[in-house]
Each structure stands twice: as C-alpha cells, then as structure tokens.
Amino acid sequence: MPSKPTYLGEISKGLWKDNPVLVLLLGLCPALAVTNSAYNGLGMGAATTFVLLGSNFIVSLIKPIIPKSVRIPVFIVVIASFVTTVDLLLAAYLYDLWRNLGLFVPLIVVNCIILGRAEAFASRNSVGRSIFDGVGMSIGFTLTLFLLGAIREITGSGRLTLFQLGETEISFALLGQDYPGILVMILPPGAFLALGFMLAAYNVIQRRFDARKRQLAMASAHK
Amino acid sequence: MPESAKMIIVLSLIAGAASLGLAQINAQTTPLIAENERQFTLRSINRVMPDMDRPDPCQSAKPRFDNNPDQDRVCVDGYTVYRGRQGDEVIGLAVVAVGDEAYSGTIRCLVGINLHGMVTGLEVLRHAETPGLGAKIEDCDWRAQLIGKKAEEMIWKVVKDGGDVDQIGGATISSRSMIDAVLKAQRLLNEKRDQLLTAPAMAAGEVCDAQ
Image (spheres, rainbow over the protein chains, first blue to last red):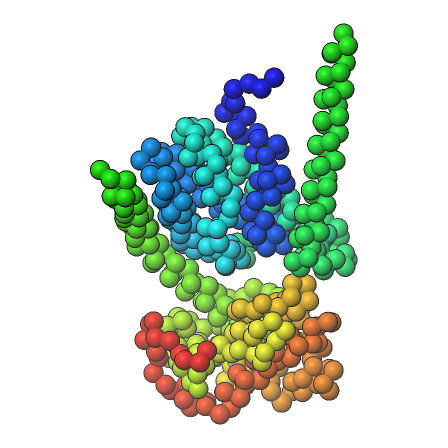
C-alpha cells in the first residue's frame, strides 16, 4: 500500500532502496577513486554529507525565487560555495585528511549525487523533507564508501585503519602481520572489482527479500 | 518585470551572497592553513635532524636543533635548504631534493645531512608511486639503510646496479630515485658548503626557483 512518505522513510530510502552508489549508481568517481582505505572513504563521505545537507537546505529554501531557466547555474553556485567551504575548513582543521583526499574534495562539485538531489528532490520538496532526504542519501553514501574502503583495505593489505591524524593512528592488522596482501585491491581495478561484488550481493539480498514478500502476499490472498 | 531581468537579478544576488560568504571563510581560515603548512614542514625537518647518535627513522625523537629551521631557509643552486642550529652554530641541514624521474612522476624528499656529510634522515614529502609497491619508500625500515651513513661508507646504488642498497622488491626505479635524492644533497654539501652555511636566510614567503 503506497502511503504518504514519512520523514523516516526519506532517511531509510537513501540507506537501501535508493542507495546512491548501489542503486542509483551516482557519484561513482569519488566512490571508486578515494576508497583505497576505510578512513579515506569515511572522510570523503563526511565531506559529501556536509555539502549535500547544505545544498539541499539552501536549494529548497530559495526555490520559490529561482526562475526555471537559471536553476542549474544557481544550484552549481550553491554547491560550489559549500565545496569551497569544506575544502578550506578541512585544510584548516583536518590538515592530514585534507592531504590524503587531495584533489577529490574540489571534485565534489561535479559529484552527480549532489546536483541530482538538488534537481530531483530539493527543488520540488519542502525544506524539512529535503534535509531528511539529504541525511538519508549522505548516510547511504558514507556507509557504502566506508564498506567499499574497508573491503579493499582488508583484502589488499590485511589492515583496517579507522583513524589517522599526523602521528596518531588507530588501525588493526585484522588478517595478521604476515598477510601478503592482494595488491590489485588497493589499485584502481580493485575498486571496480569490489564494487561489482557489492552490487551482486545487493541484488541477491534484494531478490530474496522480494521473493519472500511475494510469498507472503500470495499466502494472504489465499486465505 | 520581464523574465530575463528577473533571471539576471536572482543569479547575481545569489552569486554575490556566495562570494561574500566565501570571502569571510577564506579570511578566517587563511592563517590556520598557513600555520598547518608550517607545522607540517617543521615536523618533517624534526624527523630528519633527530637528537640521536645513530638516527633511526622508525623512532620518534626530539629535534637536535634549538632554532626554527623553517625560518632559516637558504636557496642554493635551486635547492631549498633549512638550517638547524644549536645556539648560533649550524649543526645540520635539511635539503629539499627531488629524485630522478621515478615510476610515476618525481619523488620529492627532505634529506637531513650533518656537517660531516652523514645522512641523518630521509623523509618523503610528495610522491605518486604505486601503493603497495613503490609507495614502500615511505616505510621507515627500508629508509633506515640509507640513514646514519656517510657518502664514502657505501656505494650509493641499488644491489641490482652493483651497489650496497637493497632495492624494494618490484620497485627498483622508486628505490633508485630515492638514492638519487640523497646523492644530490651530498653533492650540494660538498660543492657549496660555504654558501650553505653563510648565506643570509630568505625572507618568509620568498620561493626558491626550480624546486
């Protein structure tokens, strides 16, 4: 029964049903490029979260005054402003993470998740709903990047780094010190391999879920 | 109001508001970013001039100098060189040296060298080598064999080329480039010793050409 979408629904759809990486296949450039470690994936996710929340908020707020024909330039100005803000703030407060993410922070401007949500959601929905959509999409994106980074880091080097700032580092040698490492997983091809397996796993789970739902529906229809 | 006028006004207003906000944030963060960059440089300089008789890149140590080497820079032959001092006397140098073309671009290093010509430290400032292979130049265990040695104490080539340095497996080119950076620092000390020790420090913000 299709019901009126709830705020909670806006959040959960980003996690699973409309997961930006696994279902919408958006924002793959950062998803593939920076996820050679779990921590980098987490950092990229956090930076994208800030930009997406900010742009969804501002776009839904100013949408009544934006003429249709200039909406895309306006969205891009808003998004670019938030990205520059993140870039400067990271350089000022999380310098080491900023050095790791390097080139990829400015590239958030062209991350299609953000423009996509501005165009498809925030410019058509209320401020509250847009914020919840941003939260859901961001959590989905961040978790997926973290998972992708963790899979690549663990298979590639046998370690999992959760935090790294200057000299302090929290990391675990999960597969033991002698693990030889599968180098290709840390290199760019590993990103495609890992993502492929994740997509396959997603589809298997989704199909089982659908099949069970169909069975339940049939059972209740026979009653 | 015609649609085109509204378009122009709205877009200009939004762009103006965005610029104003960004200018504000830029002004706030500029000093913090400059300080971060300075701390990063200082941290690398500390590591290549440690207070140890047998320098070990895998251990953290206090710096040997008591000045601020990042403010005591000289530019000699296109190399940026930081001078570490005890009191007034120069006790060591940290040379920014770029090794030969490596596997992926060049490797930018900071080579610590004392006045007897002993390499006191070697840090990688920037590289784009393959993670897991060439990127092992960052492992302190590998770099340790280049440190604590004087120019005449060994043959500064990889074993494959008939030298004394164990190359990183699968990354001979990266290893050669690192050695090249050290050799450049040694040569600079040999040839320009006086200039390195006596040249007046560069002003803050001044850049050294070539590197």
